Image (tube, rainbow, N blue to C red; front, side, top):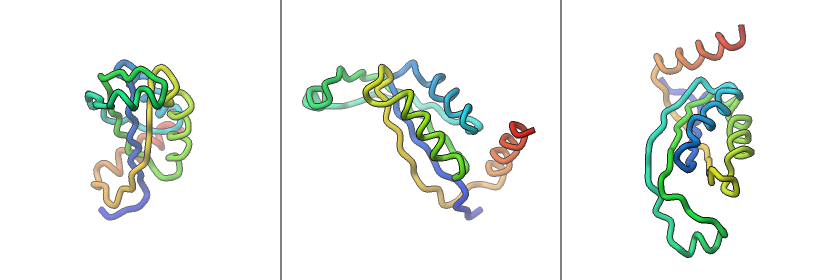
Length: 116
């Protein structure tokens, strides 16, 4: 189960953009992910600092991807859904130290299907 072949991309965007983010990630080779509904808690001074109106309803996407596509997926999400876009998104990557064998097989199998 120990592996360092995967990374976890976490993307947070205004609610309503989750399908667009997932489609963008899939176009770069991600096999899918998990969407969690959330609420933002930014302070008023954050709105003033960024010059934005903070939308409190958020969606968090968790995407487990192979390391070799992590940069392309992250860049694509950032290009379309950055903090200055209507989606007001942020995205970051967390290291993954272990993945269950069945999940690893599913991700690899999905990638092989796309390649064929």
